[in-house]
Image 1 (cartoon, rainbow, N blue to C red):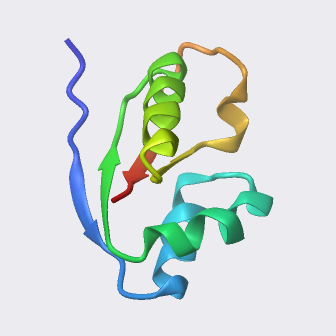
Image 2: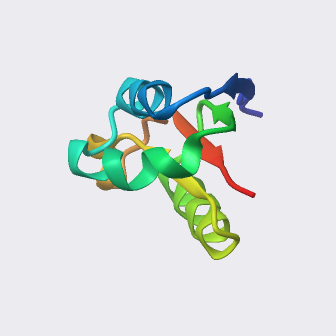
Length: 88
């Protein structure tokens, strides 16, 4: 079983939010869209397969939250990218 090692990250401002999203490797065009939603606590989750990350992202979007995933991970590969979740 994979261990995801969630980490709670405090985002104090937009600059911090942009930095955390950039660390993940998300598409640079998405940073300004997601950053304002991230100015509070973030849960960083590692070793999440793409299919699971997409489901988590859809769930979070439906709740007004967001999930950032690695841009290069848009194809279904077996490697597991970092992702971060945040929301209300």
